[in-house]
Image (cartoon, rainbow, N blue to C red; front, side, top):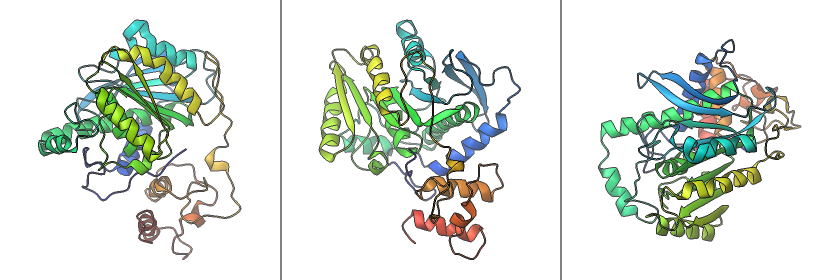
Length: 374
């Protein structure tokens, strides 16, 4: 399922209304963090049920909270599908999960998903757009970006980092079905879904932004979500209704895999009405066999590390049959001496110049190939 993330030079805004963080670097950093704090001997390790979790976020010098809900009937071995939820402004990692008598938690349990909700530090998950600049208002988006300061930039960077940190912590601890990893959020969290979904597209099987069309036609890596199913939902009494309709029409005309639903509700009231449909949508998008409610999820895909192709593809370090930035990140980890599962013919795939070695020269050639310069 992994798609190639948008590649950019350090210091650029890969999304024009977002931060300057490099997606590849952040993924590697978060993976290293997850490994450094992993403790299989802890009583909390791979625990089931509804959990309030924390981790130490050194870059923010704070203890960050996140909510984690694991199906209580999980057998402890089978790979699980995952839903990450991003909350709206003025809320926290638990607010939406416990609304309407724990509706979201109950839906995740019934459908057999791990549900994880980061607090996002104190920012908007990297996205600077607000209600004044929904889809179709590029001038308003430009005004918001002109107001970005070094402090607000840093706050949003930390928010973005927190999301990826929490995701990698869960991916490192639990066996996750990587063909069934989903992102959703409401309002500010919808903007985060568009932003994190596009910038870190390699993670996500499908996206479900709720009442928050905080994305623009230009300055966004639309190619990253070209083949990603996206379920857009909106309330007919919400202030963002016209922008969501415009966004849905634009995406439909461009041939994206988008679906759209409106419910008769205001901005906050639409959430409980569409949540059941969001989980049904995710079920329909799973790339492995779906399961009936309350059943234990299963996963039958062959692990990447055991696949053996008949032809070694140049740059295909992880052996999944395609060359993309995941191979680039994996090779970087190998060069740095980090512990990774090495595909059997990784060394041949990584030997970009055919000199029989795998080193920084091959790393540079691999990056050039990703950028279309080779």
